[in-house]
Image (cartoon, rainbow, N blue to C red; front, side):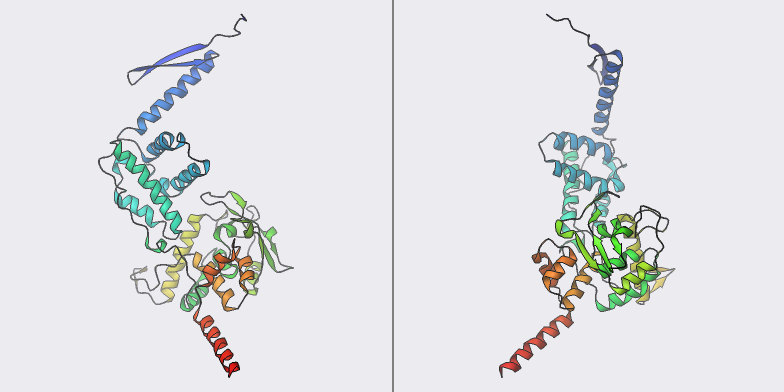
Length: 367
């Protein structure tokens, strides 16, 4: 029998009244494994105590009930994305026993400008986390039992700006710092993630066009990836109004970005949300809203105005201009004509009147 070249080194320790053993090929390796094992046990115990934070419990819950249950990598990534993006910033450091229904509903309200699908997934992650904490008796009640989807996500649809909203937007937007990105969405219909990833190499002033071939991956701060679908790769001719705006912009030293924050750096979803909030406030004031100590007392604007309304406005403008639906599909970066058709159903009054006139013209010809 061949002689062993080494002997395993054993290290023991006691945790919570129980004896544990760690082995290594060397003294150093055995000590490292002992430290690592002890750390995992301590983290697990902390997560399962009534003083656990939401972060601690989430890590333990995911390891026990998701990582080891054969769930697909895509689904596991969804849990982390929704937790890290929506839940962790709001309550991650709170003790799980101190979280109330109001805390959780506030998180749901933050998804108001997202799709219905996103809101439903956020709610699913929240309810699974807290229901299991309740079932394992970490918390005395389940604060996630009656969470409501925020109002503007319930229909799962966006709309274009009304004529008055359009007037207010074009009046106010040029005065908001860094709002060129919102104006670009209005004039091109590009998605926020595509605009955040846009570089000056993508802008061709000689050909008067913008090349779209990348976007910021959803749920990340600045991870650049290919567009949402293959159809997202496209050329968008620049409208004169946008070209004038871009020519007047000061170039950023940050990765050749076209659109950036006031102090430099790529726009984040948070910075865009803050900008949109400020824009709505200025639109409200321009529309005659009553102020008290510089605060809007009662808004004059509809509560379903979100940045994506700008993209839908562009699509509606294509329809009003009688752009063929297959061309609109390409400009919008839609994966199918059906998607474009669903957006085209938001016909403006002018489009409806134009088409009725066509109908009347046909009737005259028959006579």
